[in-house]
Length: 259
Image 1: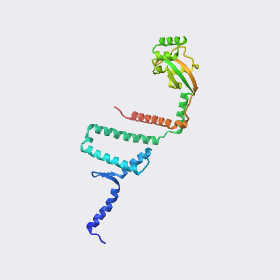
Image 2: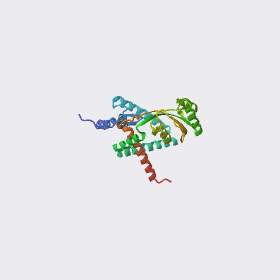
Image 3: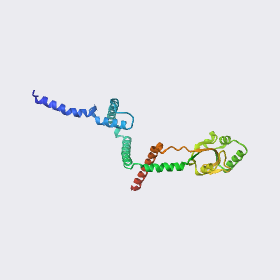
Image 4: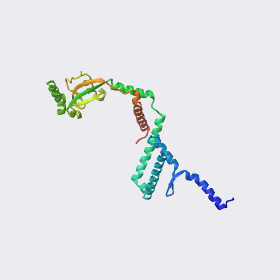
């Protein structure tokens, strides 16, 4: 059968239009939503581990895109995009997206090395030390107050009671209890005095720091529980990565001509 010219043209139009239609998942008031956009969002969700690729996921994303298109069309009708504050927000969002993409490229091109992770871990271990200390303290503003407290303690007063009554530190309500911690957690003056004490002993003289005057009691000492490198490797790598990015930003700022 030979088609008439009009029917032939109609058939050819349908053949050409079919692939184009297949490239879209929907149209909203004539505006197409490309299937590629759904594919892109599916990949993002799957890459983030939030879901697996499935018809249900694709349908949910399709519905979300349709809803967003309806809303953006209405916003355009109302001229929302022309508002100064909206334009500023769009510009800020654009900057953030582009900057984040650039920094992601930098991280990809400059990965943290295993040797750097190991060095940082060893540095952390050295700073923490191999012991943890369970201490209490009483913090007061003046040296005379601290000396008076030491005299009371030597006279038989309970450390916990004096801490609750006189300490200006947040630990006062717990009787000055600082729980278990590494010496690295404290200011140097405090750490030096604490680690010099024997179990159960109290400092003979007030310990001065930037916070005031401390009276310290050492409750106990134990071996530090430091996690193995494999347990904290990812965390250390992320910290080094953030440090690298900060240095990269600083280097760019230094190079820039700022007036």
